Length: 411
Image (tube, rainbow, N blue to C red; front, top):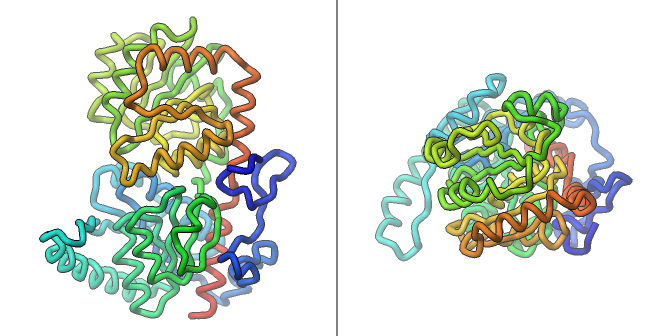
């Protein structure tokens, strides 16, 4: 593992993946939450099944790690409840997880502190906090964890006010303002990358990695995955994924350039529901270029990928590392504080990805990058190993163990 990898304080195992080791606040490595190797079954530690509320949603980057934590908690005998936003992206993405319970609550974005919209924001936030308190009381919650964004703020604040164990997780190398605010009311802050540690100077912070859904742990074989999308597994496959916030220009660039990719290259393009038809028209419905608006089987997508071109949201990068996928990363140019560039830089320094800003990406540049990576097996394998070196496969277990430990002192 390179010195600049996001969790370089953690030792690597024989396969290059990160191995468990506690990292608490710099001066508190002996905190009980950090004793990963001494985990015991939750029922032995708690004497009861914990009711844990997970506030996530708004984007897949918040929702999917929350689902991963819920899956781990349930496997440990606890009862998770997920609070998601009322956005269609949450409703659509959560539909396949019928064995988990979801409740939609309003997500309220904080305006600038000096804005006249602060008064309506505070009024709505107070109403959201009251709603969350009602949910926590009704469900008999023992702990609340927010997975980032303003969907987390009201539930975490409500938990703190009620004396419950409260946590927040941030996946990014550059944490968002909402999480930095939410951290004030948390017993523990979890971060996905070590670069985020400095942004929570007053909190007990642990580098846990970012949780990955259990379905990503069990990828199908390449041939089965390729058949699902009507692609030939014997030929190179480039996957294009714009992320939940959109990528119209990126979509257009790929659709225009792909015919000049190396001979035989196929493309699976997850274009977003709003841009699906346009991309399909641009590529002439060619059988070698498959376009879908939304995909709820990312395990199959990752299983067939030789190279992925995508945004650099932290949750997506976590899954790329877990699957060991070489990547061309094009950060979303309008992301808050340009945090996607900061994320991409971590992967680029490690050698797992090539970072290109959208403004600098031309058809010629795209063709050159794709050709270079696909034509050099050794280079692609080096990128794959670098991606795996950034993986923390037990992130959900680390977070669940911390919740168990902290909640035990409050129940």
